Length: 490
RNA sequence: GGUUCCUUGGCCGAGUGGCUUAGGCACUGGUCUGCAAAACCAGGUACGGCGGUUCGAAUCCGCCAGGAACCUCCA
Image (cartoon, rainbow, N blue to C red; front, side, top):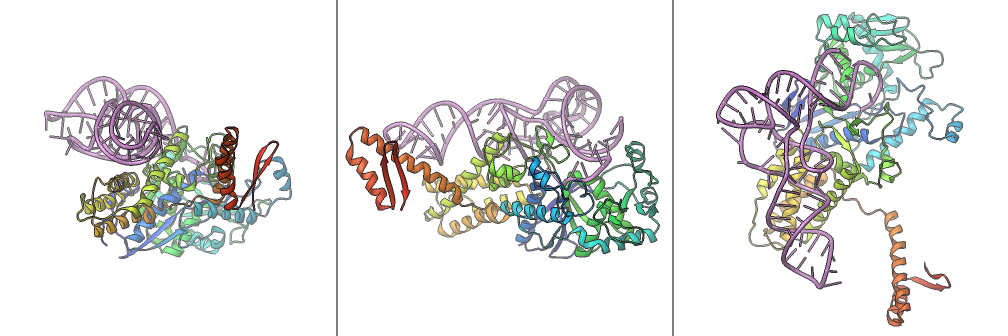
């Protein structure tokens, strides 16, 4: 299947036709989470966006190597013990091993990504497992003269780099503005310029995570890990680098600088950035403390949530906006998404009930093209979803006998609906959870007992007995007591 | 302060030079129904403000207003 894909490349600030470096293969690197907190709605966005991208590429028969890292070193030391309640905090008086924190939150991240039906990447490397590779890059940059040592730490010399290469090509920043505008922070006196960034940091005595190096016992700078791991698993130049817009500067800019010095070229051909999810018009993020975790969404356990929302509702909600637009959180919007998704799911189930006929009254081919065109146009999932709702309309009309379809076309149409909804958008038809079913059973039984009680009040003994006897046949025992009837399962 | 970006109907959210009245949710009328629900049919409301370019602009340009992201860890 040869379909052209267009991708918005942040580097050129325009949509470009996607052409992979190696025919039939795609190398994709996406910045993953720093695992020191529970995953929140913001984390779901890049995960879903690039899950969608890899699903599409694979469907179009590319062999995709999708690398998404886990950042487990760099900024952990003080955030490790953010307990929610005092008891939990007390339990952590004996500080946890950083790797315990990392392990715990990595597990949590995986659990919630799985619930969102996000496929596991091909490789999920960790920064702490690639210290050697990072040190190799530092040595390389030092040899080439674009980094300097200062008090046991190594900094990248941005000013020098900018004399030979353009710094700021991704973010559109100008180094002179940066130098004059960057805030001066404490502890930066080691740097020649405040725009310089750390490749290696000497560890303070209290810092637990530390590795030996030619320069000091310390740990690698944050920007370096992605350069090291993408190079190791995808090579010096790969196809697509993804991540949140908030990583554009300085993180991705620094990656480009590091790779340009070390390898002689920028790491990726296409740079894709997903936009932020906002709450009340503001970015939902850790520093603002206004984030809602995925667990809270799934349980409804948060002040700002009217109710619980299922993982698929969250996924659908995110897919209903284009990945480069901000998306504002709101209960109304979420409930609209929930209802819309239900409508879609019901129609998909009803696909099985459609009778075939001797002719087809709408164009399957046109439907197919519209769907492909939408998703191949820089992952325009909102348009694809709109097209799927056209499909829903067709399904309902077919069921109502208002339109017709031949059995061949029906088969094709079914496959297309399932392809786009399930395989590409990743909207699985989640089974009603056992828990939910169980709690509903209680309500249903109470309803039956209430009906029986009403019948008894009306001396409608036939109905009352019928309810009791039929329940008995199904294995339920109805027990009449002074306080009313109760039931139990035999 | 610098850089970049956004502002679409009751809500969310596509579109980007001329007929897309996108789509979802909500709403209104009708068909169906014992009554509902679902479904189907029909319907309304929009492009922040002011100027300009153009035969024609929500879409291009300028100014103004409001908002956001980044410049420090952040998806």
